[in-house]
Length: 400
Ligand code: C2E
Ligand code: CA
Ligand code: CA
Ligand code: CA
Image (tube, rainbow, N blue to C red; front, side):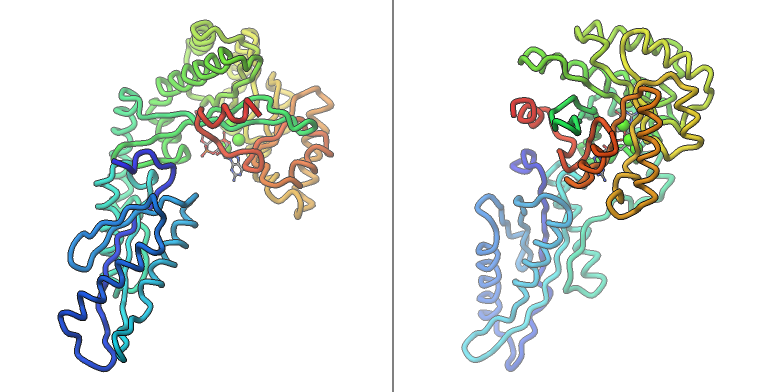
């Protein structure tokens, strides 16, 4: 139960495979003594907030709460495992240990404590089967691909009804002044049993199954309700970018849906930006018409992931959009790759010529931001400024 409040948490299940004694046969008492040494070593390396439990004779489980990501967790867990494996001396004898550990992560692998334990156990089993003496992370997706898809599809439908979705928000900043200009809403699926499923895995499925239509409506309403809440705290005139799938735009009543959501949450249409991915613009004429109708409401429209689809430049001419959002693929190697820099420079020049707003996504370093500003790009978004964050953390951004 303590697990649910942590941002990131790993459960490491540890099993002491064997004591390999060097000079003498290992007596029963020595075994108990060695186990108590291991338990003390664990207490020594873990933080105050970590929990240790004894699962059985030589099996321990413990949490690692001071970690930021998977890499951290693996490093820490492996460090602990190696420390526990260090030989133990009793009198003049030295005992060697072999330690196996299996780990599962919260919330990626599960959100319930009991599921985290089962999954760490699964990972541990794998290590033992492979001979022991190492660390393994639980892997999602041991079921077959098709079965997984069917399960996901059913879960997806159920989750829309039960509201297992959440939004995170990623700040956008003005590249010249570094002031906050708004947020992009990004959907998260935290399934109670399946864990945290990334949008790249479920959005395509939601599109195929049309679940994206009710889900997208929920996303828009949730984002606008959040904006309303911030307005009431005094943070006015913020902009909110919301991703829309082409499937949603093709819906007959999409414009009315957007208009109603704006009215319902008392948000000015000028505060909303609709982000569309260019590669999915199927019927360009129909799409142009819908885009124009959305703009007639007063909202703005952005082409997302610009530069990755087909005939990007012609879209600028053919689709009546306000903003071009340059794909992060071009930003990531901006400082090393002259081609990327030339492409970004060309996009920025062209977009500026026709009076479009330009946003760069995937800004990961100070240098990226400076190069983009010097090229004439207006806004930036990326890990350098902030990762997508929960609403409570956004308040920090709004008040600093
Ligand atoms: P996107 O619209 O291109 O969103 C930007 C993605 O880049 C986000 O991934 C974000 O977390 C990630 N990102 C932001 N800054 C950086 C950075 O500096 N470096 C790197 N490497 N990545 C960065 P996320 O949240 O996993 O979303 C993935 C995609 O899922 C989105 O790509 C979008 O296509 C789709 N998606 C997310 N939320 C929604 C939604 O509400 N509706 C729809 N239709 N699609 C969504
Ligand atoms: Ca986007
Ligand atoms: Ca994008
Ligand atoms: Ca994308």
